[in-house]
Image (tube, rainbow, N blue to C red):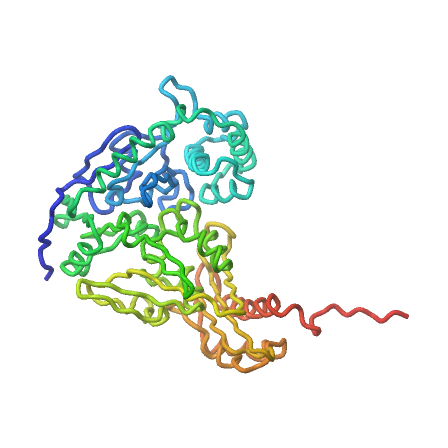
Length: 503
């Protein structure tokens, strides 16, 4: 039996801005999406529904939020963005771009000029992704344009004209008075600050077929801990890039749902001589720059997690907390020796991340506990670290398997220490303990690598599913060890092409 929540201090409705209108909303269920609200309640039908799982980008909108006092707009998937996560934000749809007299926004006009729209269904989503890029990057490279469009799919294969539209609009920027988000930025930021400055938890209740469903928006991490102690079976939602599909695809009736994406205490990221401390609510986008700078291989992996919309919503803490065996961040974090801090109403406890995953669907998280932060040690001086993601598509795809390697050699070229971790090879993210043991103390050589490959069969018994067969996964894991060796030691003599001696 749960204990009643005793601290409803700030009413029963969330507040946000939709385009130019301030919204107070107190009639929605925990899994009602922003997409349904826009299309069904507000008749803003420029935002389309394609996949309903955050893959196609047809539903892309911008959400502005205050990060360290600065108003930042990010592209997100409205199809998996729950309404309860919008408190204190500014939602911008494609209808808000054109001027009041009908003059198209430069991004829209560039799409017309460059023939970037074919059937037109995906066009609003592309426009909003390009608009987000236009706001954040005055002179994007082609690579940055392509990265911004990773999360938008066009079945008419019109990518080249769309990229040209992005290049055209970056070459000519009108006065900031033309653009509504540039013109009204100070006013919007002030309104959001006013909303976020109000104290107290919000609880929105809505009757459904099973009773009353509740959406809970705590105002602080301390209140979050108190609420979770009273509601230990509540579903915690940060980015909803996974939980969103529970509602849109599995039709689960989640109740209650606690929304935590707005809590600043969970969004800090700091670096010192020992390592990097990442709050559980830090998104992939927020973590990208520091990881790329300090652990480049990890940073490059982040750029392959979903599209920009997913990276703007999804959190590293959420990727860990849900315990998926194919989550992309646990393998590199385990290989780096990361530690996890769990927090509850009663206090905190810290553990090696690898100990958090107990079995499929089961983690070492007690009732009332939540993931608070992750500490990532710096690789040892001279260590070599790599992470490899294997997927059917390079961009915006779920891993068939993901492997990470962290190697330190001694002065004689022998393996002093090595940590190897894989996702997609077992019921949980897991280290290759037998392979590590077989390698430790041995020369880092082709003969050593060849001799230990079969040890993977002692560590993993992968499954066959639609992403890959068990045989493929097993062979790919062994080959990734070979790849890591070749990249760190250079091609050994035995593998060099035979060159006949000169006559």
